[in-house]
Length: 340
Image (cartoon, rainbow, N blue to C red; front, top):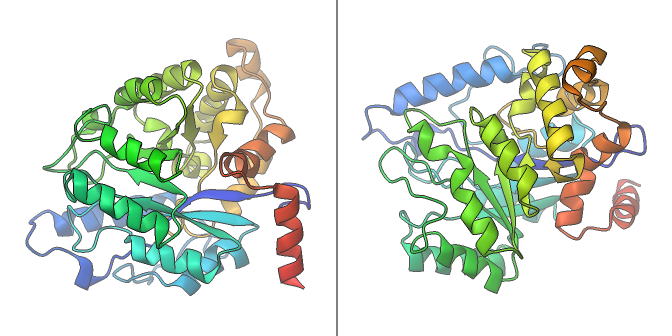
């Protein structure tokens, strides 16, 4: 919690498996993908080793542990709750990028603070196999949400495909899960970037009005498209996952983006996510977000509203808690009791 009144729910963290054992040696682009990933995450981490940057000698060829994640989220950062997302990407990994078992290990070790977001892929698992896996993840692992990655090197699919995607949305609804999340924009490796445009979530949002669709990463580089879509569809929310790491690299870009989002979408439909462990502990990014203001020049020239403390409270925790039906006041009391 920040300043004793800002409840923080990290909407996106991942227990990654970068270990050599998990890397696929049969793909010629595996090494290139890993090298590019390390370069990118090195740039996005907070620059100071004292507050956010992993040391230069940090070994990324590892499987992150539960203790690693707990320290990053809850010891080094003022985070109250977090959602651990599985990453159903097998392109360069034997057991996926962030295996569901590892996310479940984190959530089961700290059930009062960590929520599991499961994941499946209709081409990797097959539609029927994916439906069975969704049932397992809900009934046996306690998944409260599902994450979908429709972009891949060879087996991409559309989120509005009535044969591949719709049966999974129906299965989620039948399992009592109404929170569906999607990786859009920010392609990995040599994925086709256009596959990750957010336009294929419009029809599902119309056809499943009782479901919540969360688009991650502001679909960058398709920012204008995703703002337009979220402004018109009441059940489409936007996650700031990953992109808020630009705060220390390109602060003006973030000021403009936040101005556009507040003006056209509304703070009540925005969700903060750190992407830890990728970007290190969320703490310094949270401080930077709390300090964020929309400059007067942008307010005058573009009509952007100023971001308020209430806006920040919604974005940093109240919105995700609301989507999951979590009573924040009761949860704060529960966590305070556990800390004694």
